Image (tube, rainbow, N blue to C red):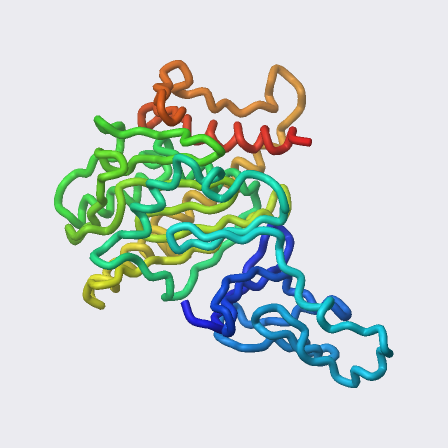
Length: 352
């Protein structure tokens, strides 16, 4: 939020710096690459600094991207122009509801056009708690040997939980002293929002629903949402999915704090996150195992009796299309949310 704040991330394979300028407070996204010999100019994952200095030959850039220092500059002669050698900015940067988005394409749909039907869900997500959310308590990272689309699919999949997470739900049932139902529930849906975005209801009531944790307190909106191509919003976290190779994916989870609530309540939220999603948790590692098993199974891709195909047509016959938005909804155990991802992926892969 402050001038000089920055963080490192990736757009695909490209390392970038997201920085708020100290001078004009504008947010910019630069390639993390010195214009001299290509070394990264920033190493710390996040922080606050007015300058980025390349350790190789000492070139210095301000946090607006300008090249402001070149040791022994006279060696370059009269034609050397520092104004033309600032850090290269990505072509487009936009913000919505406090979230920062960037694109390597100079042309294309605007951010609002791309987000489309996802915007009301992002609005709801960003205003959780009494005063909104904070994403400043660190990050959890993991990788798996499988395709990136499986993590996106799984985030909004209501079909697998009763099987993959059966042991976790049994533990929670014992903890609360009653049997919990994580099978089909009335009034719950998966939704293809268009443009590759999708929603999974985790509580009845759609966008207005909230979830409760085992302590009975409000723990966030009652839905998971994926935003194409690589981000997800869950009741306890923001999830960024990074493809590294066709069979390798890195995922970063950013747990949420709520503004305006007690430290004890926020700590309880973090413990809930750890129990489900942590590296030694009772649920998320089961998903990672399924991704690995799928990627292994995908290798049986011989063109023999359609062995190479997966089938995502559950509920296709009963999609309910909203005439105003074009969103396609089916029941919670169906696969409209997975079809949303693959429709957009296919469209992008076939584009000129």
